[in-house]
Length: 229
Image 1 (cartoon, helix red, strand yellow):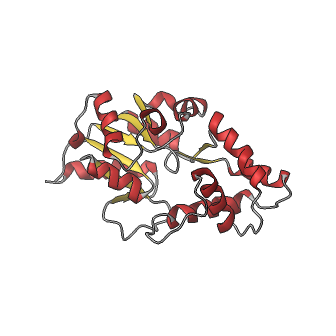
Image 2 (cartoon, rainbow, N blue to C red):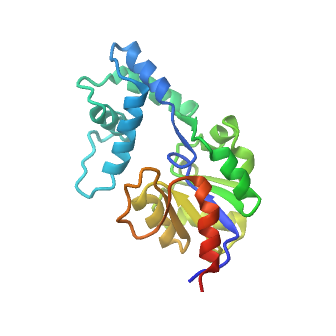
Image 3 (tube, rainbow, N blue to C red):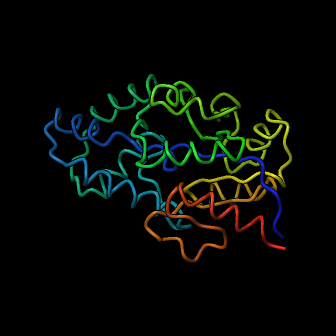
């Protein structure tokens, strides 16, 4: 059934911002590994798709190194630069590597902010709030829920409920936009929130949920949802 959506919660990485692939390529180069930022970007997209598969096996027990090794593997790097990975870890832990604002994001948020209350629910490392301010997006959000600060990670519905409680809104009047089905859609749905999967490459046609290619399409989708009986 349709219903009035008053509040929109958003993921951050893969939804609003992407990793700084130029910085990653530069750190690779410092260790003698030549790989383009574009190749790393393509590899990261493949990794995000691969982790949706139930048979996907991460390449390392350490989540950061698993992410870095998987990107290197998908980019065809035969000798992953471990020292570069550690330098990037330090940068991410202190500054946040996900700092490239996706094209069109700021304009889309301006449009959405005129219609909905906005908040963030992110699996992050305690730096996401400062990062959003640094890249010029922080002022759009009434609340920022960072999993590292709460000790809970998506898809646990409790993380979404933290945002609902802070905003004083009900789940049934809230939608959530994220880019990973088994984390964002599954978690939001478990919390009673309308999930929207952002799918710029159209690789999730088989997923049973609302999908958009860009954040700019969310306004029209929610307008259509509201008109449903």
